[in-house]
Structure formats: structure tokens, C-alpha cells
Length: 210
Image (cartoon, rainbow, N blue to C red):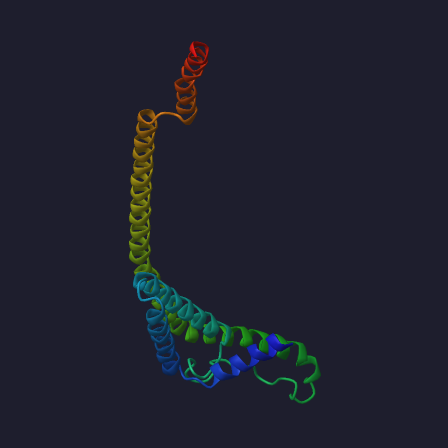
């Protein structure tokens, strides 16, 4: 129920807005969005421009759909309906017999008037749809620019990763060279033990000589 109430309130607000005010309001909303998000994302101005253009296209397309759903609105309908069904039921004597004919003529008149209202609203809606289409055309080079920047950023990341990998490989090779130069801890301990062994027989011989 809350969503329906909000939608009804929004439609009431749009009902009180004139056609020129609707066009101007779309521009104001888009510019306010671009300025606010531009200050927030200063380093992503191309993305902000793309988002603003897409918002402009969406709002204009929504306005065009709104107009086509409000056929007969005096804001974009000029003049009176061209056809009105005659009242035949009030004809003396044969009035009751003419009621079906009156209903058929009323249905035909309603169809003609609906088509007339559609013809009145269609140029106005097409104006908004045209604005939306031009905005989408402007969005194409912006999308291409973003794709190019994304590709360049990915290529820079690959180069940085390659440099980091080369640096790691170089450090590993230098570490292997250092390990080859330095004696292993087990070999050094063995050499120490071998160096201490000749002292023991000499000590025994010296004791025998004594």
C-alpha cells in the first residue's frame, strides 16, 4: 500500500507540472546529479558523465511513456474532441429502439477521439524519446572511453605484476648464489669435529711417554 500511495503522490506532483517545467526539471535533476556525484568521484569524471547521460536518457524516456499513458491531458491536447455521438434515445416514439444504435455510435466516437488524442500526444512524447535517443548516442563514446581506460589500467597492472615476478625471480637467483657460496651448517659442524679428533691421540701418547 505504501508503494501505491507514493506512486499516486508522484503522479499528482507530475499532474501539476507543465510541459516546459517537465523539460526544465529533467535538466535540473541531471545537472544536480552530475555536480553532486562529480564532487564525490573527482577521479572518475568520465564515469560520472556516463551516469548523468544515462540518467537523462532514462528520465526523458519515462516522460515520453508518461505522456502516452495520459492521453487527453490538456497539457498536450489542444482543442475539443472532433466527434461526439448524437443522443438518439431521446427521440420521440422510436427512442428506445435507437438505444443500441446510440451505443454503437458512442463507441465509434470514443475510438475516433482516442485516436485523435493519441495523435495530439505522440509528437510531444516523440520529442522526449528523441532526447533520450540522442543521450544514448552520446553515451556510446563515453562507454568506449571507459573501456579503453579499463583496458589500459589492466595492461599496466599486468606489466607491474610481470615486473614484480621478474624481481622475485632475480632475488631468488641471488639467494641461491649466496647459499652456494656460504658453507652449510651441517658441513661446518662436521669439520669442527674432525679438527678436534687428532688432539686426543696426541694426549694419550704424551701420557705414555711420561
